[in-house]
Every structure is written in structure tokens, then in C-alpha cells.
Image 1 (cartoon, rainbow, N blue to C red):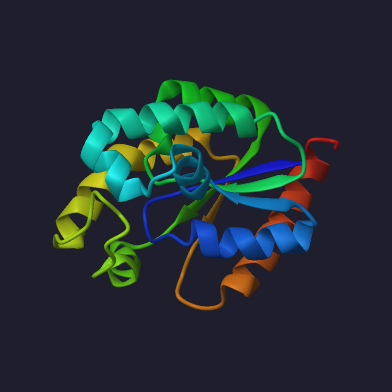
Image 2 (tube, rainbow, N blue to C red):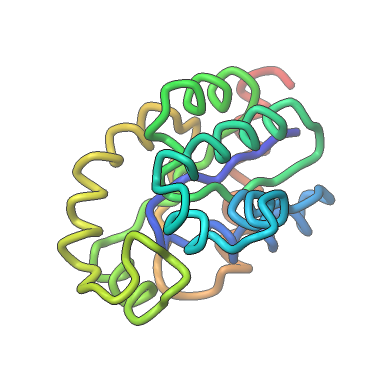
Length: 174
């Protein structure tokens, strides 16, 4: 089983992903953490030095690596869907869960957090709104299952997703 979680910053991909991996007896990976580890630098540094394009190049390499590994739950970065190659690999090789969230939820979860280079030090609402406008259709395009990430227990949401994954696998005869 290969499960990739996509969605905007603040939708809960990393938090829910950890619980989901535990529930599925799979390995959990956060793509941003893998990228930072491989680069030997944190994500804001990569953005500062290499720009968004350099980061996206690194991200594409990591996506290619993990879309072929079994028994993984992968939390992606919010912009992973911007590259056609990433969308194609995820769609062809993985079950993709889109964690959707309201703009208010996303703003509340990301406000004041500096580890997100595209939001750091800025009012997140207009940036997140624009991201949703551009990326929303891409999340929907790649998603096998869409789940609303609402305030509340990430552990409960992981249980709901695990049930939807079982139903999805059954419907596909797996």
C-alpha cells in the first residue's frame, strides 16, 4: 500500500499521516523532512538559496523515489501537485488522499508559523486563498479520496481515512 496525502498548508497532512501510518502498520514519511535531510539544510534555507524552483526539483526527485515504495504513508508539501510529473507518478502508483479544509481552518493552523517559506512573516489568508484557487483543482485531479480536515482529533480523522481506504481497495478488488 502506498498512500500519499495532498492538500494545502495547514490541512493536517503530517499530523494525520502519522496516525494513519500507525493505523495501517506502514512507515510514515514527511516529504519536506526527507528533502531537508537529503539537502542537509532546512526548507527555508533551500528556498532562500535555491528558490522555489530548486526546492521543487528536489521534491520531484523524492516523489519519484517514494511512489514506488510499499507500505508507506507520505505527507507531501502543499505544492507537490504543481508539477505534472508528481501528479502523474502519484496517480499511477499510489492511493492519493486529498485533505481539504476551509480557509478559516488553514489560516488558524498556519498563522505565525515560520517553517513555511511561502507564508512566513505574511498574512496567510490572501496567500492561502490564492493557493487554493490554483492548487485546488490539481488536488482534486490527483485525489482518489477527498476528506474534509476539520478542527478536532487527527487520530479520529486517521480512523475515518483508514475506513475509506479499505472501502476504496474493496471497490477496486484489492
